[in-house]
Image (cartoon, rainbow, N blue to C red; front, side, top):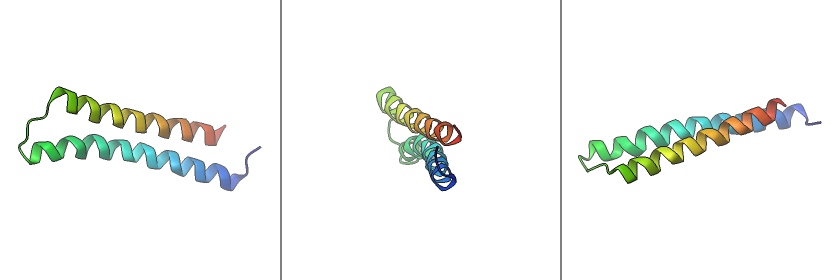
Length: 67
């Protein structure tokens, strides 16, 4: 059985990764758009897949903390 403090810290790490996924997705693409650079499908795919990975890590941590 996990202690309450451990569960809270794991859940907060999950929240961090979920928020990081949004920042990666938004600012990763927004940086290229603001600089008026070409956003290739490969770059967009890598950025969005990294964001999905971070989001998935956050969901796993949040779920684990509540179990």
